[in-house]
Image 1 (cartoon, rainbow over the protein chains, first blue to last red):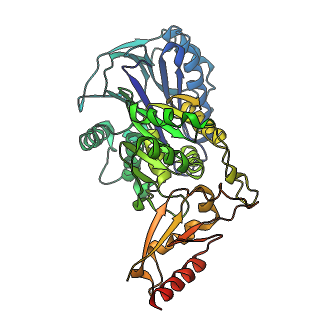
Image 2 (cartoon, rainbow over the protein chains, first blue to last red):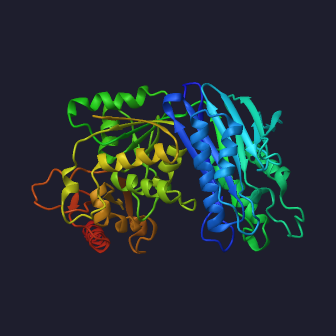
Image 3 (tube, each protein chain N blue to C red):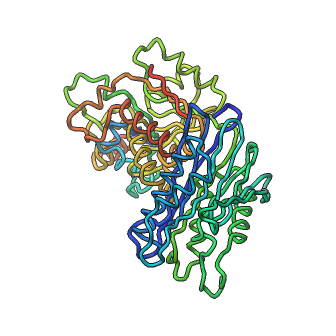
Length: 391
Length: 89
């Protein structure tokens, strides 16, 4: 991504009540060398395993075709030919919506049979003109192609019909929540918080759709993908004392000179910054938790936490989901990471002798290892831009 | 009467060795000492590193100027009561 634009991509899904797997598939891929992100949502015919196979095949094939810039109609024909035919309905079928964001803002959207994408600019829904294409072989299937030059603070939202039809049969929503109901909800959320993250918005849409369902049981697979275009939010994470004590001043100054938010993870690291920059650091008792040491407050630093235990818990939450009920130091750090786009880790490699005592729990990992796991998951699952420097 | 200053190390190794339970003093202190103590949470006091002991003797807690090694909630409360008693005598 360029300095001028970053795309936060997030998805949330809920499977049809009673099914063992998702019938919708979302697949997002970042191609850094082409400064491009491709995100695909496919809804397979039916539900459960069969739908899952159809939608998984569709997203995988579509991704290959789109990333290699193959001609779209031909690609769609190949996809439709390749999908297995349903024994009951005698057709092969899965819908798709593809968002292909490349270079500095040029975004193309290809859609077949999903509810049409929602484009939000300046807090309003903007209708985008689209071109309709159909292949001679599959005349009844039409593909809509749209193009947008995206700007910072734009959002593109993809939903499956599980969202627009949520609540179908419910007295309050005889025709379902509908796309318009979903758009109203999204606009309301953006009015409330103009900088709402893709993660929060996608989760909100799915949660709200589920609320509409009879007995809150999903009548179909519910999926939402949000792409949030914005100027990159930068974060510096300083963790661990440097191997060479002569570098203490240098790393402390990184904090004061950084042009973005800053977080310090580690008691000794915080002590170094406090000493070198003559800042006052105090424990923040509002972050009390029995399992995670409390956070601290330091002037000019957005968050100060303990090191290994907090980072280990952050990694667990990045894997399994953030505990919204808590407000401990790890939750605050995980939220700060997810809210940032470009994260610079500076990792001190000095080994803490006190942590090597065999009586201490095994979970006390070596800092380098846990940071490595965190930045991998931030890159692969959350599509963050990460840099790591060891000192 | 001067309050007893209790410093609980919140460094990683002290925390996992039991400092988290001692922090309960902050929220549910025994009634007899509740208004006679001043709790100070501190980040790593480096006592785990600056030691000649072979194994870690944390969690470390300071009650006024006295260091308690391998501290527990009970040990700390006992020490606070002892200090308070000495102050009265």
